[in-house]
Length: 337
Image: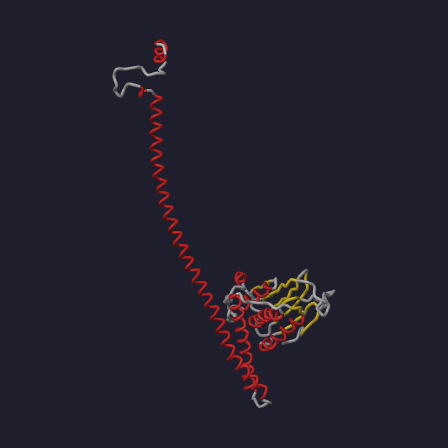
């Protein structure tokens, strides 16, 4: 580079002017661009140092959080296993107790029936009433044990259905006649009616009867003396609807969503105590058949429980086929049970 070019570059401050003094106030580090670059470099280095420390602290925090989550998960898993074990023990206990109670219960029923059959008029009215009370109480006990056994089977996953073609009116009449003595004790009016030309259902007749028994026993229980209980069945769209209505105490709206929960009991004046399994089992049985149970109720006006059972394959024509119109058959309409 020629001396003239060097001189021009120094004048334009592209190159620093040479100085014999090397103090801090002179030299190339006084140039604004160089100072700015140095400052930026220093800040970047400091930033890397600071942020590097924050990242390490963050990693330490995350390690602590992960350790706490792992311990919480281990505790939760232990709690789940303990609850499962307790639930299994409860199911085994219910199953064992229910079976063991059936033996003395069968003995009591047998002797009571024997006493009733062989009395030949030798029992006084008070004694006859006592025998009848024994038979009524043992029947309630039998139903309770059946509910407990079914609950244990459901919890253990050993619940089975044995479906066959049934006549809906016949099963319903059987349920009505079975509950009639209990309704008679409270002088309640029990009536039943529905469509005669109703399609047959491919269901488990014993389980359908169990659903109806649970609903009817609740209706008798929660309906005052002299009240009315109505059973109706209809073919609507692609399902059979069976309703059990009563003029009982009714159920508050806020309690209705919990009615089908296990061990739930309505706690209100006029409501008798129970084991809280009847409606839960009825709902489970209905769902096992592809249907469900719904409730409509108002306090002081009574309740209506409706069982919805979908129609499956068409039944054969041997007494269970599809019919035409909606004729009504009546069983005990307007009669006092």
